[in-house]
Length: 213
Image (cartoon, rainbow, N blue to C red; front, side):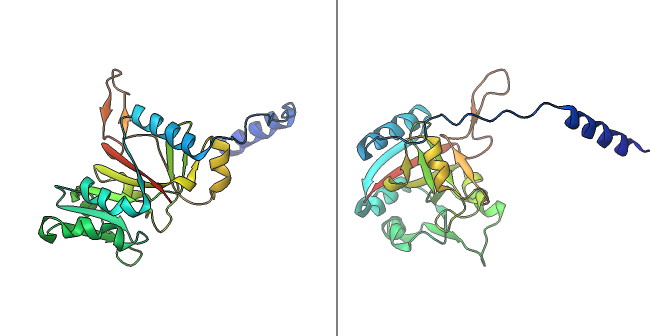
């Protein structure tokens, strides 16, 4: 018997003698009756507490909001699934000198290119108001995970219809087999001497545009 067989034998023996696993209680909250305005207010409150910048806009006003947010940016990235019309106003400003890099299946942006842009704009799959969490699941309007993790600034569009109140509601809308990125404010850590450092594991700045309609 080698070491591997001995270890596996001990594990099988321990599992054989282990007591039956008790049934997990499922009496937690699974749904909420919050209205649309209440969901927006709660999500905004949580995101602002996490030091994110939040804007609530009607769908028709989103291109103008993006143009304002991208002022001063020399270049930005976006996934192929976001409509080009969203960026028409932003691309026209500053004499049309601002570059938009599109990440597409046949034209993937490398890490160096993403690190060089001033911002990235993506959509989102679902948001959880109670925790202030936004989930990306690599849909066409969100792109690959690297797209929202490398640039220093992330501008994220959240449709009002995708806001849930609590986590169980959000999980029911997600496909657990898809790669996901869960965002609760700008990237930050306090691992070293409890000193908060931002931008270590992702974007230093998070701008959230909540889209009505």
